[in-house]
Image (cartoon, rainbow, N blue to C red; front, top):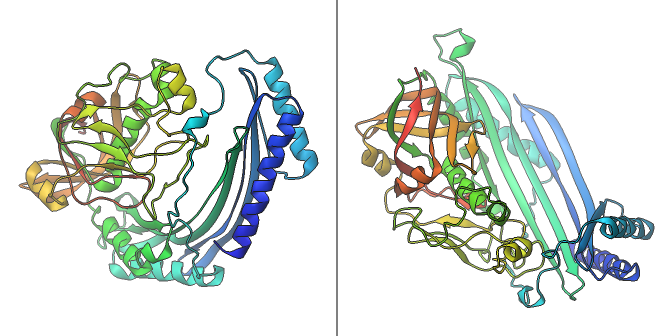
Length: 450
């Protein structure tokens, strides 16, 4: 951590402790607080011209107080002593008038993190704002020069951010978490050279993100991939309605795992608002599937030694050998269900799914004929019933090879059936983001087209 970052961390620790002390002074029986600072920039260019340069600096603090089992919360972006006192007073006023909740309270002391290894999450990028415009232009230019059918650009962008967060509670816990995130992206538009019809246009994009700029793809490669993905979509058409195998390409396959997480989240389970209520210990996927999280990965997109309430994170297996083996719990939902927290206050960290040896090309051959999905649209997923219906685009596959691009179709099914009919997970893991998966092949789904 840089000297300025170290100074900010110390300042945030002092502010967080001040909030806790003020909560005690105002009569709270327990309290938790956090304070954070985030700064950085984002630069966007379009058609070789700088379009926007934005500097970001956000800071905030929040406090939750407990009067026995009554809870109140308040927040502010002002770190002054007067503002801290006012925020704590507001939280205390709320708590005094709320109904008691026997499950409310801090994480149990024995659950709090005690070890804080260096996960190497903070890596500064020497590219300044002026240089970032050059990087974005290089990315866009590589896309424009890739193919004569690239006729327009929605822009190239570069971003770089750093954040520091401090959490503390009245059990005596006080710890910080810091990290950086950097990204490069490009989006372009293509049209067949022989067509003047705007409806024949297609757009697509590509991006790279990492906490360490050394792990980013080159801007030129990002531009070339964005261009190739775009021209590959030219000539897209609908297909006839049918039932067929569906292969989710790795960049969209992670969404299926996201739906699983939503269904096993503790809040959904204790509210009986999930199709997976009372399904612990039951087969959900084929036996070769294990889905786990790894919060201690170095350079991980969501690595952390403690969760949003200070509980120690740990490696968890939510699906083991195809069987649903754990819910996703914080302290509150754990108490509601008669279980312990899984260290998932604030969500999951670095989720992975087991995979086989086939890459995307191998999975296409395994599928033979069916629909390769590369883009999903809409929000037609109901994790209460398991109903799944979303707009999709991609490619029709015949004989294990891509035959032609497809658009304006809808794929539908039941999540419980989709999970159980998972045929294979590819080795082509998309390494961007918190939830990472290879391409996922499903036995069949309903496809609504012409």
